[in-house]
Length: 242
Image: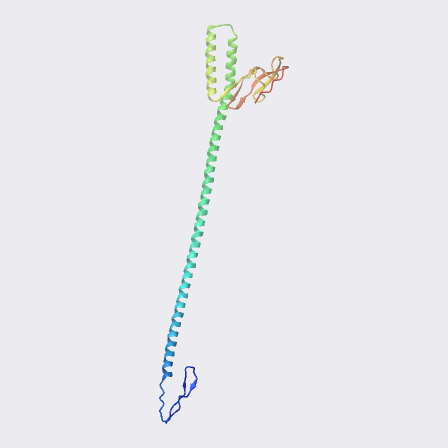
């Protein structure tokens, strides 16, 4: 029996092939092979998509691990930076404390040295102050003996006392002690003590006329003022040039 067969042309249009009367039509299985190829391509595409999805998941997982490692490293780095900053601050504090301690030590050393020097000066000043009346007595004895009649033995004695007096003044001079004997000098109320006034028209006003008792200074400090008489009635002293 002859069965009319409908086939699709390239434009997917159904055409009826021309078949002469009395001929048999043979239909080849083209559609079945095409379905198998499509299924194969679909499987390949599915496998590719599955591989790509698996790769994406793996990459995402690796990226997540890398981010976690990065965050952990950043946290460690931040902790290390905090530790370094804390260590630097501790070092700066220690250096500051050391500098303050050194400054305190230097101040203590200078203060102690100054106190010891002041104590030494006070002790020396006290000793010199106690010796001054003795020196005054020696000077008065020498002056009194020089005013007496000539006597060879007395003269030898006075010479001996004068030598002792000179030695004492030499010892005191080594300690910075100097006598204040301002005869003819301007009166200085800081170093002189006026015990009388003498009229003298020829001398400048406020001039030391006579010294009753010499003063002494130790270094720049006056340890005993000189007892003097001061002139008046004379011309004013001209101002000293700087």
